[in-house]
Length: 330
Image (tube, rainbow, N blue to C red; front, side, top):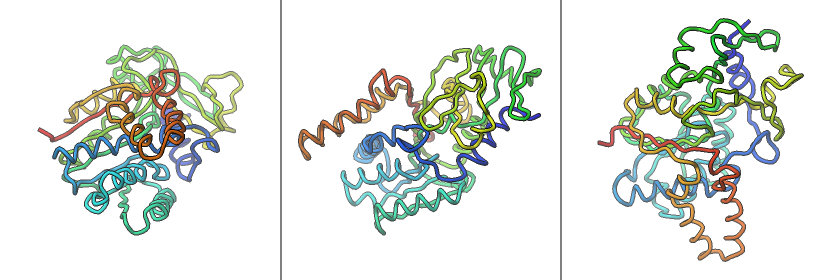
């Protein structure tokens, strides 16, 4: 019998994420990146404005963590080139990626997209990184950190793909108690990740998007995505053995826990917003206006429909949140 967190880790990191997976219509789920390049373009717009006012050096690093095939970072690069072509020569672009098959895919995609104009750097782990100044972006990584499941004074274990409940570890219960939690998912690894980030970057901004809330719901949100069907983990007659390693497993992020972990490791919280508010603040409507002026109404209308998916309260706009941290900026 093993802890649920170990079962979760094996599911995602020894099987599901260790080889390339489709995202979008052909995959198990959508992300903001797969909806429209304007998601990355809006982040690029924010970075560009920071460079313009001298708050980010034009020779700094831009990192992505959890890049999958590298589409988000590539979209950022493409928009930065549009804003100022010289930036793709002065800036440095990097991905933290432990899996070699994904590294190869990312390199191939960058080569196809930018020929020899852009050099993509790879690091297997944050421990390899020592950088003076960086902007780091991540989309939907914290919902994939291993977690324990608790219910009152018990926690979940797994044997033969069946979940059983036993007395909970006191440290896990203590962590849950900090957030008035008695039921649901307790994420592991946030503190270690924030510490690694602190040690990797001297001066940095970190922007990450994910689904969840500041307050825990005291219920289970953990679920499985398989070919755009959603299965709650505790759905009766669910065949965990058949889905194990072949589908995505995820849960809502407790942003209070995430923010606490980063603040305890020397990061400042710059902002916590819904995805809709964050993208508007970063300039997504400005980009749409530029598309209207440069490419005409029909293209604008097509992109507007995609942007609505990102910012509509009934779709991704309210469900997803952005948290923005900084370190060493004075």
